[in-house]
Image (cartoon, rainbow, N blue to C red; front, side, top):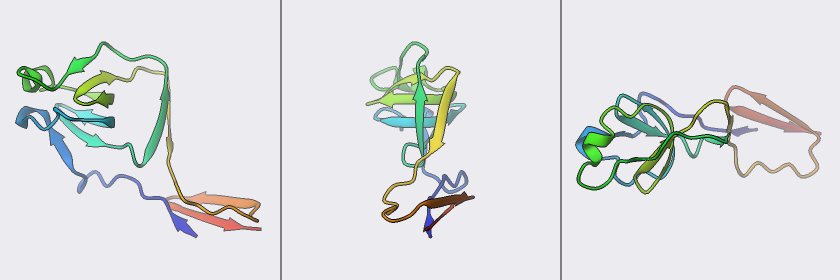
Length: 114
C-alpha cells in the first residue's frame, strides 16, 4: 500500500500577503482573506477560466493581495482566481502499478493488488 498525503490545514505553511509573503507565489493556492496555502503537491487542477491577474509582487503587492480569496493559479507572484467550473483531483506520484489490475483508494491510502 502507499499513502498519498493531503494538506494538513492547521500545520501547512501559510503565506500572509499583508506580510509581503505572496510576492513569489508559484503554483496552485487556496487563499482565504489574504492568507494562502500551496496545494500544488496534493492536487492537480484543470480549469478554463480565470479572473484578471492580481499582482502580489512589487511596491503595491501587499495592498493588492491583502484580501485575496479562493482558488488561485499563481506565477511568480501574479495570481489569477480560478473560476468555476474547475476540477481538482488528488495527486499521487510514484505508485508502482506494474502487474497490478486492482487499485483501491481509501482516504489517504492506495492499495494495489492483482
